[in-house]
Image 1: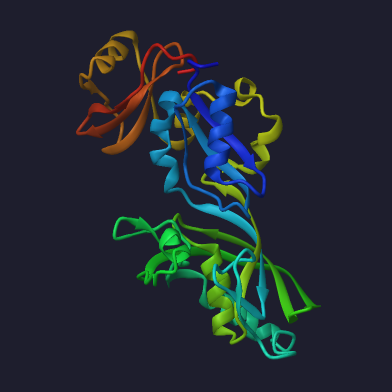
Image 2 (image 1 turned 90 degrees about the horizontal axis):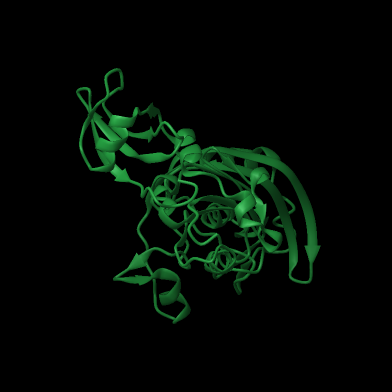
Length: 304
């Protein structure tokens, strides 16, 4: 298994970090060369896209894909981390969350849909002065993050429940969100609670899709057979990009870093170059009918 290359779709359980998932996969795959395309908090579950050996080069092109999440937002309470793992720092007056009007709620959800300006949570992984924001926040330092433009293409309210607990009254919302890379679902929960005047935070989060990849096709981490679930880089690249079927001479030329003719392909890229034996030779960029290597893949790895 050590020399295999490919992509793994993994369903991360709650309670572990994305780094923990990578570490377990390294042991199972027998290689240190394992990376991921986008983290999930320990509280969150769902899809992680992992790259093994040279296929980690494909992860660069997965990170920026749009994503889908199912989440539960609790209105009526705000926390230091904008999720249930933080310390409560604010609570709405008794009955306030229960009195939220459904029409007003849906109007506010609409306001948070489309292209919006979002301030990431202070416990995000964004770097401030070379340090992660969450590290600064946990060290007690003040963290000020600038708003960023993100796209929430779909914000669907699936269910709402009026609940009560020791801390007071809540309105729990089950939602489905499709969004651009870099969107913080915790921040959406925080901002929805803020515009409604009652505070809000996230109590559950599950990532179900990254681009064309779905959690329904993912392996369960605890019982994963890496070899059985490893997807060939050529298969993944063919899903992500246009393809160019190579002949033997073109395969040799690209392997040596040479340019080849690519008539009929639009300018730009990447384009997945596939050898006659089905191996992913590399990713190409095209200009005026000529293709040159953008990323090459080694010829001696199993599964390439």
